[in-house]
Amino acid sequence: MAAVQEQAHSQNVPLCVDLDGTLIRSDLLIESALALLAKNPLLIFAMIVWLLRGKAYLKQEIACRVEVDASTLPYNQALIEWLQDQRPLRPIILCTASDSRLARSVAAHVGLFSDVLASDGERNLSGRNKAAELVARYGERGFDYVGNASVDLAVWKHAHAAIVIAPTLALAKAAAKVSTVERVFHTPKASLRAWLKALRVHQWIKNVLVFLPLLASHRVLDVIALSHTTIAFLCFGLCASSVYLTNDLLDLSADRQHNRKRNRPFAAGTLPLASGPVVAAALLIAGLALAWQISHIFFGVLISYFLLTTAYSVRLKRVMMLDVVVLAMLYTTRILAGAAALHTRPSFWLLAFSMFIFLSLAMIKRYTELLAAQKAGKVKASGRGYDVEDIPLIQSLGGSSGYLAVLVLALYIDSTAGEALYRHPHYLWMLCPLLLYWISRTWAIAHRGIMHDDPVIFAVMDNVSRVLLALAAIIVAVSI
Image 1 (spheres, rainbow, N blue to C red):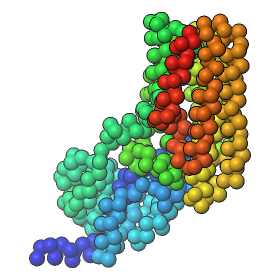
Image 2: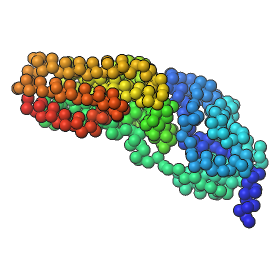
Image 3: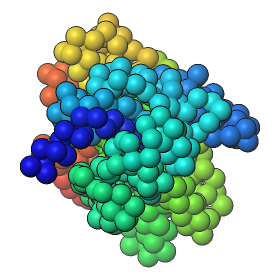
Image 4: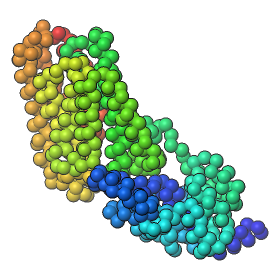
C-alpha cells in the first residue's frame, strides 16, 4: 500500500536529472574546451580571460565555438533505461551546469526531457544556484534529483528524494543524511587496468628503437652505455604515454566514430576527463627530469620529440602526406635519441634506412584506415586528410618506400662503413631477401584488410615477423 502511495506521489514530483557524470560518463565543459584547444591551442589564453568573467561566461563562449556530437557521447545506459520507465509517470527535466546550447543538443538526442535548465552565460547552474532554481520552480521537497557528485548535496538537501550515481557508497551515505535516497546506480571506479590501457604501456615496445644505436655500434656489453640507453627507453615511454593521453583527450569525437578507438578509456567514459591533463603533465615532467640526467642533448631530442608528436596530435595528422612523413620522423627521432644517450653521432645509413622503412609502415597505417572507411561506406577516414580514392596512391608510395629501405641496406653492406664494423659483411646480403619478403608480405596482409591498424604492433605480435627477426639476428651475429 505504501509503495502504491509512493508511486502515486511520484507522478506529481518532477524528476530533475544532472548531465555531466550522471546522464553521460563525461563532462561537457571539459569536452568542449578540449575540442576548442584541438582547433587552436592558443585559445587557452582566451579561456583564461573568459574565466575571469565567470564560469558561466566561459562555458557560453566555448559552446559558441564548438559542436559536440551528442550521438557519440558515453551515456549511462542503466540510467537511461530507468528514465524511460519513469517518463510515463512524471515530467523529466534535464538540469545541468553545462551551457544551454550543449545541454539542449543532448536533450534533443535523448528525447526523454520535457524541459532543459542549464547555465546561460550569466549564471552557473550548479550547487546552490541549481538548488535555488529548482526550489523556486517546484517548491521545497517538490522534486526528485539525480546527481553524481558532492556538489549535488546542496540540491539533494531540498529534494523530495535523491537518486545517486556513485562509484562508491560514500556519496550515497552523504546523500542519505540530507534526503531520502530512492535509488543508487553504481558505476565502476577508474581501474588500474583502464589507466594502463589509456597510457598504452604496450606501445612502449616502439621505444626499443632507442637501443638500435647501441646494437649498431656493438656496445651491448658496455654497462654505462646500456644503463643510459635503458633510462632513455624509460624517458620515451613516459613522454609517449603523456602524448597518448593528450591525443586521446584532444581527439574524443573522432575516436568515438572509430570501431576500435571508441573503446579507449576517455572516449568510453571509463576514466574521468579532469584527471587526464594532470596525469599527462606529471608523466611529461618525470620523463624530462630523467632525460636531463642523461645529457642536455638527449633532453633536447626528447623535447623535440614531444613538440613534434604534440603538433602531430593537434594538427599535422590531418594534413595529407605530411602526417605520414611526421610519423616516420617520430620513429627516427627515437634512433637519434639513442645516439644522443650514447654521446655519439647517429649513423647516416641507419637514419636513411629508418626514414624509408618507417614511412612505408606509416603508409600502411593510413592504408588500413582508408580500407576500413571504405568498407564502412565512408568517403573519408575520420580525422584524416584522405579520401578512399587515395587508396591506390597510398599503396604505391608505401610499397616503393619499403623497397627503397632495402636498397639503402644493400648500399650500406657494400660501403666502407659496413666493411669496417663487420668481419664478414658479405653475409649481411642475406638480410635483403628477408626484408623484401617481410615488406611484401606485410603489404599483402594490409591489402587483404586483415592488418592491425598499427603495423609496428603487428610486427611484434606476428609469428612470421618474429622468425624473420630471429634469422636476421643470427645473420648479423655470424657477420661480426
